[in-house]
Amino acid sequence: MAAKALAFDVGDYVVYPKHGVGRVVELQSEEIAGMQLELYVLRFEKERMTLRVPVNKVESIGMRKLSSDKTLKEAMETLKGKPKVKRTMWSRRAQEYEAKINSGDLVSIAEVTRDLFRPDDQPEQSYSERQIFEAASSRLARELAAMEKTDEPAALEKILSVLREHAPQYYESAEEA
Image (cartoon, rainbow, N blue to C red):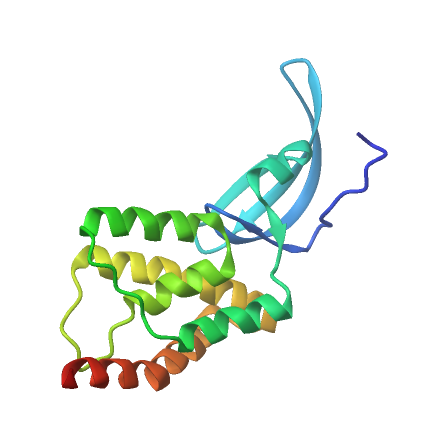
């Protein structure tokens, strides 16, 4: 195992699918249940959480480096698209949205953000819709912030401005129909 090059270095930003963007703060070697394990120690500032991930589990968990510029561009384009509102029960949609957020896939997270965005002049969202929207937009903003070396509020504002600019055309045409 020592021969295999480590995928991440101390200081790297990584995406852990269920928790979003974290930073590798150290590499540890610990003996657990009689086995020597190499661990990445990840720090998630927003949740004030530290996570230890065995190096040999990184792939199966789906931990990855920050998205490529191409993927980020695709996610930002996704935000400009027409929201897809399914007519299924909310509980089913909520499960699908949560699964997309927890997949760690930036474009899927952008889809959830776009689909649940409500312009100020639209009807109020339910509490659970708002919670999922905030989870998705926050996850998207944290990765955008890490990639553009800015902070989360600035990245979130960039995302919301894209949504505000493109969403009205879809809502106006829906009202006329």
